[in-house]
Length: 298
View 1: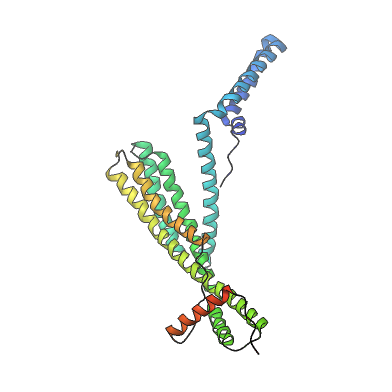
View 2 (view 1 turned 90 degrees about the vertical axis):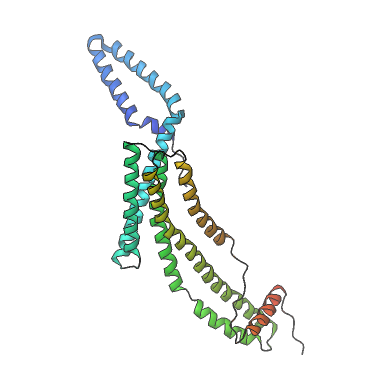
């Protein structure tokens, strides 16, 4: 989220306002030639009054605010794109898998977006420029999502779930023995920690699958919109169709975010020799995890 710009500051630094102030200064200097200081002060006071009135009115105009917002969005888009491309170039130099395909799809999507910009500017369509800007943002989201998936893949490769599974098996074997209460409690705590490791790896794999599905869908959705504009350029519901296509992509993102924010209840991954052993061990561990360990009878 980017903070709202100061519209008053944007007005003061706007090129048109600076040009107007420089013009007023030149007019004041020219007026001082025949009229001296009186002419200089008169023009300066008038210019200052106009500037104050404009500063009170212009920053609140909807058109001015919309223009400032578009400029800020364009700057943010440019900065983000530069950062993403730098990271992808570094990944490509390191020969990371999938980078070349990602950049190739991105360039194709950019070509489509530029053609839509030209179509909107030159001949006009049922698609507004703001709609094309959404597609432009989609191309940058595509790069960001590709980098995220690469990061998730690297984390999956570095995960220690295999080691955790082996240690879960060893701890379960120890828990089947008669142990002092404090040792049993410590082993159950360790079992819970290793279970969290395995479950996090599982959630990571599910989230990666959801995001990969969205990544694959992005170029197709943009191509769908492009073909729709080219075949029906003056359709009245073009913006609605675009919003519907983008909403499908957002749905995948929302599901992934919900999955990440509300993980499934922790369950113990069991390694046993038979399904019946898995079921019985799961029931025992889930029941014991809700109760404090009982003292063993002597």
